[in-house]
Amino acid sequence: MQGKRIERVATLVKHELGEALTKRLRDPRIGFVTVTEVKLSDDLKYAQVFYSVLGTDEEKQNTAKGLKKARGFLQHELAIALKLRLTPHLTFVLDSSLDQGMKIDRILKSIHEENTVEKQCLIP
Image 1 (cartoon, rainbow, N blue to C red):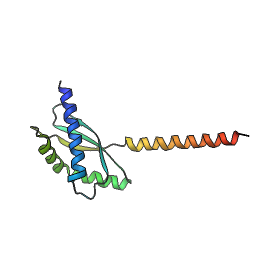
Image 2 (image 1 turned 45 degrees about the vertical axis):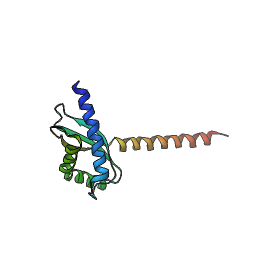
Image 3 (image 1 turned 180 degrees about the horizontal axis):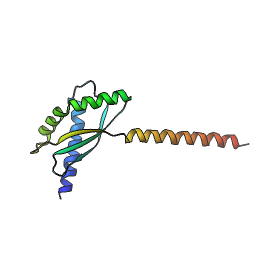
Image 4 (image 1 turned 120 degrees about the horizontal axis):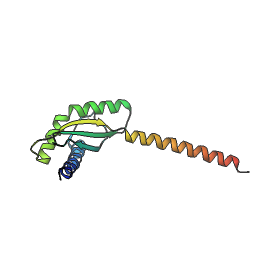
């Protein structure tokens, strides 16, 4: 039963953070951020927020700094929206799975293009 509550709260945290990041946070360092996943501790005191950012490595570093600075504001926004007894302490973690997926996609496309060129060369 506790697991379902954790999942529901994690979903709510993810949704509310997404809303706060896009509509209420005014930090120019924070670029195009997507909250990909939220993992909560069993006692709901700690939350790891996984996010992805489109842009260069410098933009990703700036976004990480901005999120770290905005942690208190975002926790306050969560407290207002969720009305929990304790608001989870937020820790932001860059989710690199999107970058890895794009890298794999580029590799597969290049392999496909090489195979297409080879097939065209073999046709008499």
